[in-house]
Image (cartoon, rainbow, N blue to C red; front, side, top):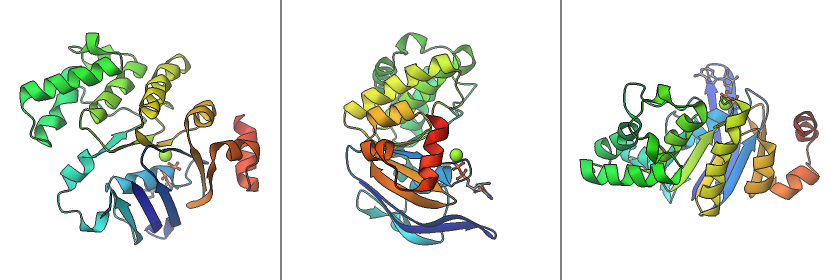
Length: 239
Ligand code: ADP
Ligand code: MG
């Protein structure tokens, strides 16, 4: 589904990613963790073609990012969820979830509302459809952001620390939605430090440090016996 092949990137003199390779199969759930500044956000941002890279290639469903012509259409196939939700504050919940469907997928108003309502139902927020984001809790806002991404019928979801801006009591409701998605077979790459989620939901854990992928192992192995000393140190601080 997603193949990141020997990708490197720098900002000025700073090498943010060095020769990163990662393959994610259909239906797989991969958690990326690692210290702050290790390049996790940059890596998943590249998959959504939000940033150029220097060398290597990224293939999504058989298509190289280098050959993508219609960027908006390509991006709509990858559901992106950010730490700070990034909802449109002036739009109602339902309008947040219909906007890109109409603009990018050219769906009619009726069709986009129907799809939005299905997805809001799925994340348990249909009753909030006419509120503004500011009238919702952080956990609810993040669930709206997930519904918005799902409404575009993505082939995979990329989530960048989806719970790290939330108050602790709201983390669970968002992780529950992600767990449901995973068990429904959604392909996901999730940057998170929620090690309980990683342990119980992910198939593989990728550990990054200083722009490199240091480990890419089945989840059980990561928790039982991480190979690298850096991953061991990282885990010992979190668990
Ligand atoms: P992580 O998500 O693992 O915390 P990031 O991918 O956000 O790491 O950032 C990796 C490094 O790249 C950090 O040191 C950050 O300061 C740097 N960086 C990120 N974006 C930019 C940018 N647009 N310009 C310059 N440096 C950047
Ligand atoms: Mg980050």
